[in-house]
Image (cartoon, rainbow, N blue to C red; front, side):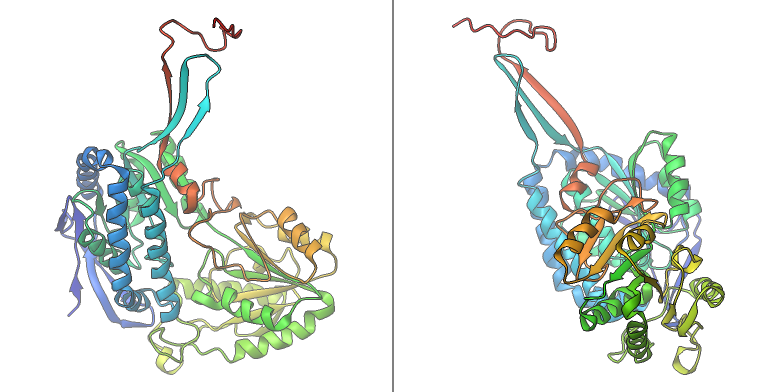
Length: 499
């Protein structure tokens, strides 16, 4: 008997208007049914947006420090329930338990950070060009925010988006990915328990076609924040343009780790295992390209093969598991299709097949895979696979390396391992990515710095840190003239001291 979940609209947990449902199952064992969820439609979205619209005046007028106090309570509550949320995440999404705990911790960190912004929310004061005139800029809330989140970080990314939106005074309608709705529902239950007022956050589950499009096209939704596939992001941007919505898109990545000839290979191998095969390669920041100096290519590939060969596939709730399942069988099929392409483009070192033996037979598993001696323009080195697949590309010069790093359509994260400080700074300058690491893998962004990328990775906005406040608030410039006479900026340009 599976659990039955509902939408949250205006503080009430309700079924979809149609009564239709869909089922979420564990990717580690498809016989493990996590729950049944409302297969919602536009009517449910209309009700959720109306609830958010009604809640907006009171929430936006609450002093920001008071909103911050609520987020502090939320952060503490999330910390108290971290293990519960983590285990639910591993069951529903598949990542190993240690990674799930990190996912929840990201949301906790952002909640604390944004709670503190309730007492800052810095504006600007500047001198006026006119005498006896005061000039400043302040932040204002925007209205109802539509949030559409992915399955690979089912607690962290909702936290990235919700907490800055809330601290700025907005209300929200959120649609979780259909593969991880239980994580979202439990997360929002804890936010409500922490003191978020009714209607400030509303959750509607269902498909992108029915729920996502209805949120994007709703005239009362002023802002859209989306993380997911690049093609979907382009479609969302096109639809949202018709109602002049503000849109933030966090999309794909094809992230390189560059390994120079002087690198500490022990450190590199630890970092590659974590960056390429953590979350089964299902991160937008996953290291799917390894650009290795030719002088150490063969040694690196040999040692990496040994390390990958020892990785244990399995249920993420088992202590012995290193790599969990991918999200579903469609993902297995996509990864397998790229593995077939890779066999024609490069040397298959290890893996390359779905894993269906024994205890893995009922889940969605794919072997950790390495290709070597690939060209930088090979499809497996250019296109996002989103699975436990890493492609090794030998490089001979810095100029060639920079060309290959920047040759893909994405620009999210990059990494360089070297002891040469000059190369370290060149990587910061030369690699066209929004995140840059030196002697560290491609994953590990922190909550107080902007997160996002260049090119097809998004549309230029950044998440978390101070940058998130700019997206979720409106700047309002204010001028107070206490001269007692008409002064015309840009026209009355000569200052005369009448004292």
